[in-house]
Length: 308
Ligand code: CP
Image (spheres, rainbow, N blue to C red):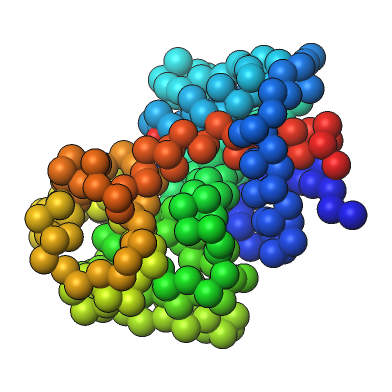
């Protein structure tokens, strides 16, 4: 029997295929059924050291829809971090105020450090350019709903694969599902070597290309990502790749694509995906963002042990 009670959610690599499928199944139930009250008396601390719209608010909505309460911050300038308090000290204090911590941080490894420092479950809501595992559950749920399955699909990852933490986590997760992966990016924004080595170890079939036209006819899913301006050390390096990929309805009309292709994007978007795409049959990114609530309900309820 699968139980995720008290499990930290730090890396998608910490999850078996069975655990991933279990979370997707619970997410489906959360979407269909009203479970208000199952987290009554529980408190979530939402600790956001980096900006967020979807992740923070969908965790908050999920907790409140299940009857729980939320504390936290979304501006580290209002916290004692500015007085020099370490992350380790902060979270050791905060664990006394809540039952579960959701942490977004600009440093890779911040969630692991937090999980190692406290005795309550910790959920990684994005750590630097490393991973964003709860987004991956949202992405897989969206793929399953829009394609009817997750197994044996061809997925194109487009854009900033160097800094795009959602792409890193999703590629690892799809390694369980016999996916063919196409990494579409300029050479300077390729998927980092250690991720490719892990995929090779898992015997995943992948190919790196520069342009979508090279592989568009193969894809069941196109996973578009924003170029992560905030992670570039030098602004001039960002300017070299800014606006390199611009998907629009007219671009899609020119491409040779498979029937049923779906476009996902973790959002926010900047200029890589035009609004003209929004009303096409390809677009599922708004449904994807809305699925953040039932998926995060499933994660919170499972980790807090009210669903086993
Ligand atoms: N997808 C995602 O992580 O969005 P936010 O940065 O708005 O949370």
